[in-house]
Length: 393
Image (cartoon, rainbow, N blue to C red):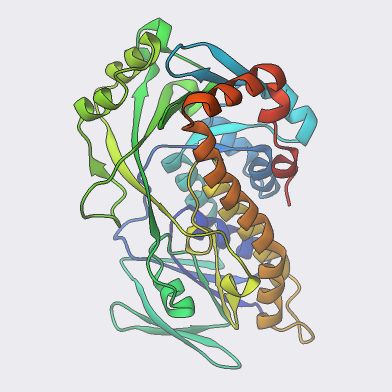
């Protein structure tokens, strides 16, 4: 008999888990609280470690239709505009790691995963239903949904994001922490920008207490821009899509170079995202207990300074499905979920910790910033390339 997988959350992590589990022969029922399956937000960078998983799910051709594939990652000084270092992507990444480096709009990746699920008979997608609570026994897990319906399956995957209800019940470890950083994000058609501001590469601008990242999406026709500054807003932490005042962002970046200011001023509309995370995972028990497993931001929310939030969720999904494919009379579900957690927690913790460290490095001031810049000029690609990450788990 097929394993009955219940999934809370229909974002990228939840859909990825559904795709992976369905491919492993499971029956999947997914519950999303929103009335429609959609994704907000801006762009995602996907390293070769992520692309290799998606290509293994036969999504390579669909990705080529909607993603961009930059040839280069460039780091520039936000104040002087000088190039500090660069990493070759494109054919170099493909040769080194067996998969390309891609950049994509979140909504495009979400729709691509959704389309892959809608073609499968073993998947049932339910929108407008929130998983309120669960109960597990030795043989099953049961859910109570927001409309009063109760359902039962073999396991529950909590993929319900940063403010996960499943995590809250499983771990009872409180709310996420506020990072003290604000992300201003925007997407703009490249055709609407002056020629000097258009770009088909990834560029990271580093400055004191700020940084800006830009890269192409949607086949290179759009430019994604994210500016990170120190600050706080009041209220609405669970809503990652606040309206933003362009004048506030321009004031934060007033001391940066003319090229960066021109880019920021050329973007007409911005949205604001208050960054939150949790400390790095410290044990496998934080990712799975009994018949309940956590995945993606519900398990290991991270700051976006290694560009691996969605990537780790997709890796989680692949490992979870790899374990569930072995379900039989000898290996029960709790054992398989424990193996999933044991195989994932240390890598996820490393990515979380490195993301925090990157944020500190990006925002350095004074002599420490000078040391960072000198290291990038001298070592460049050796510092920017990440074999431990891009080779995959």
